[in-house]
Image (cartoon, rainbow, N blue to C red):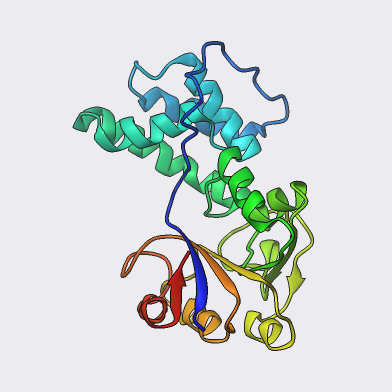
Length: 239
């Protein structure tokens, strides 16, 4: 039988039942001075229609790593579809702030809705995240009582991607070696390298009956090598 594939190609999942924030959130007290300074400089380049509450939410986002519904709307609508002048200013600020975010959390954007939906799917399953990076995804799933083992051969502070934080204990191990001696129900690949064969090698070593959760972009973009996507067509069924 073919591998089952739970295919996620989302930056965020929007909570359709949520309402637009009406009150300003409290500013977290433990945001680093460096991030405050960067943000204050960059917000001068933002369009005047960026409200004070959204400015505070962006600061909080860099501290707690979770996308709120209001920020999801900002990223999705204003960043992509607003007029060119506004789009440029916002894009410039967000892309510059991105470096501070990646240092602390990695490349994956999470909101609580995505965490909860994924946790519900993974309930009562054994899970491993291969290429866990900072461990940010695994950490949030562990808080929801998911039985997940984060794995990376160069995690967090030892990585080549400028990460400066480990959010949870990460097993230092080659993913292929782990799959040879373990049989997790679910394997998570989140933003795997596109310029190596890492993703395709992991998929090739998965066994019938296992489920892959892939979080990233599509064919010939910035996650997963081309062979990985060819193998998805050949080797998997979509759940």
